Amino acid sequence: MQEVKEYKNIIEAQGLCRDYSVIKRAEGESFLGKRVHKTIHAVNDISFHIQKGETVGFIGPNGAGKSTTIKMLVGILNPTGGSVRVLGREPYKYRKQNAGQIGVVFGQKSQLWWDLPVIDTYTLLKKIYKIPEQMYRENLKLYTERLQMQEFLQQPVRQLSLGQRMRAELCAALLHNPKILFLDEPTIGLDIVVKKQIREMIGQINKEREVTILLTTHDLQDVEEVCRRIILINHGKIVVDGQLEEVRENFEGFHSVEFLCKVPFREDIVLPGVEAWVTQRGSFTALYHNQRILPAEIIETVLKKYPVEDIRMKEPKIDDIVEKYYVD
Image (cartoon, rainbow, N blue to C red; front, side):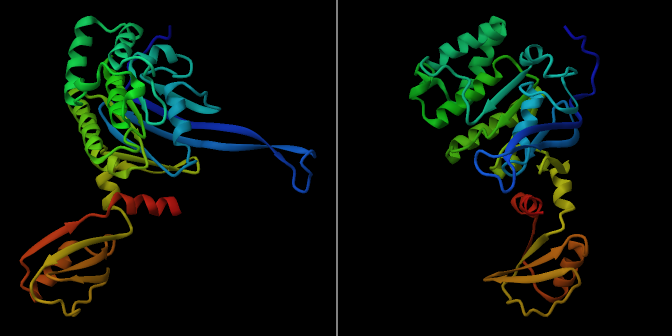
């Protein structure tokens, strides 16, 4: 067994690459003609580290390299270049040792036994992970109550609704007290109530047990409510890595400040950096570039001219931020 030295970063990737070789028909050749090999760089020289207790949204468009990266982190795939360490080990060499300290929830793939009642799956997982009896009972009680699962614990998995199954999947991933929780589309296809339950559960285990969260999703509301940091990957490369609030602050698109005022806006304010004014009944909003003008300057100017009743600062939506990088 590999000796695990003290590690600062719970996840660390350095120059990580994963290439695939595909065979394609040569240009101008018939179906049975000459074939050529082409290398696809699914993950292309990415580096990042994640410390204990962080909540990280790992996002990007389809085909960006997210799933390939996650598979390397959990040890399913071998890197073709660079290095990766999870919990101080190389996951592709020590997958079994790391499996006991990580939890995984894939929205499109179940870890539950299809024909067994949910509770029987948990009993099997207890034996597989060698969970001590007291820990198992405490965790089972805690998570089934918080996720409101008591009514379907005795039902076969195949009879569960999607929302019930995803709650059962999350519980299964947490029974053995993992240090890291990998979540891949955990709320896909779920209704608003179940999404809220799962998001709250993720936040609670991060806060109470310092479980490190790595979340991949196309539902950016998940990221907004769960994660404090985002890593955005596109075409196999990292294009953004930072705290969500800092990413918002440095966003080059529009920020806005809304003024509630009963007096109609007369479009008599011109400020460099304010791109436009949007008027509505009872309010008007300044759309401005954060790098060119401070909101305090806008507010000061407006207050000199209008009897403002209230002011609302509006940060750019994460959807707007991410869309910019998807397009670029």
